[in-house]
Amino acid sequence: MPHDAPGHDARDVGDLLRELAPQVLGSLVRRYGQFDLCEDATQEALLAAATQWPAEGQPANPRGWLITVAARRLIDEIRSEHARRQREDVAYLATPQSELVGAAADAYRPGDRDDSLALLFGCCHPSLSAPSQIALTLRAVGGLTTAQISAAFLVPEATMAQRISRAKQTIRGSGMPFAVPAGPDRSERLGAVLHVLYLIFNEGYTATAGEKLTTPRLSDEAIRLTRWLSGLLPDDAEVTGLLALMLLTDARRAARTSAHGELVQLTDQDRSLWDEPKIAEGVALISGVLPRGEVGPYQLQAAIAAVHDEAVSMAATDWPQVLALYDLLVKVAPNPVASLNRAVALAEVQGPVAGLAELEALEADPRIAGSHRLLAARAHMLEQAGETAAAAECYREAARRTTSRPERVNLVKQAAKLGG
Image 1 (cartoon, rainbow, N blue to C red):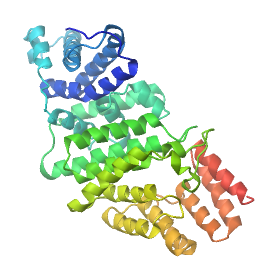
Image 2: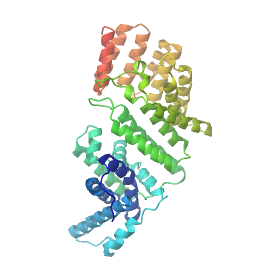
Image 3: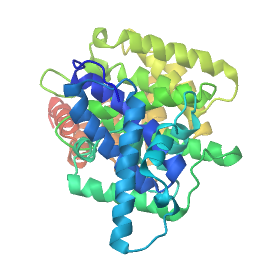
Image 4: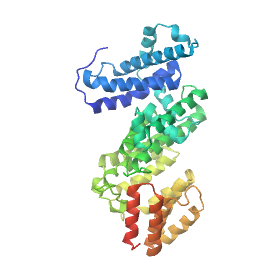
């Protein structure tokens, strides 16, 4: 297959491979089934391209090159498995390899969106746990290697490899058809897809554990995949809302940490460091979808983020509007995190005593009771109310419960500032 001249840098190749990964895997799975074998073959083709293309130049048809190489690897694996087990239960082994590879190269056609979308739905299969959905999505749809995913989530590579392997086996054993669900099932499954992308972004924006506050690779990948999904489903308001939410939130990334990697709270952030193009795009997206009709939770969260991003300072924030949006959010999608954030907004509008009363109700919810975020919110409100000793103790307890070093350091500093 003809190649272009060498000279594309590794980043160009990496970006292209991540873009092509779901297209290649989707084409193979649609034709051959056997998700686990197709995914392994696709990963081998991606690794081969990452090694060869920077030195030899990109082929004239990168997607066709990857599909051809992946199909050859898949056929080799099937034949090897056939030989080991000494059975003949794969009907298309009698087909000449050249015919199979040629058919695979033709499996993807421009404008065929369902393959990639079906792949994303498949990775978010309801029989998988959320961690497995995330890992499989990043590997199969995002094109990240197991080593990259394990590094992002701070777990051993062997552990992540086992998680991905179990996920693939679960999908294989489920008999899941390779297709985009229809009707109500599609809406339900799309919710799972959006939730997985949301979780990936959140882990990138504020890592749950470790020495660093953020994991940019994950938040960047979540934005890329959500932008891609928005292109596939341009009329879905919640997909657009999620993309807007990510952009408006990620726009603050540069201001969230100091030069030494310490957490900088929203009140103290240098807002001149916020990414204005991302804010402008996010505001335009959410402004375009809110008037369409039924409003979902991602649209409401994006609207809240837009209010924060458009304020020139913490004091200038339109807190009554933020509170009104949270009132809607807890009705549309009630959950303890939304209720916690509403309590914070309520404290800004009606004072800390009102906010603390709201937190008391949340302390009975086992999903959030005792979490460091609830304790940190309580500490802040107690500080606002002038109860410094109680606030310092809450800050210290929150610091003991978080697994994020930057958050722990910040909470300890807050306690020390109050003499705690």
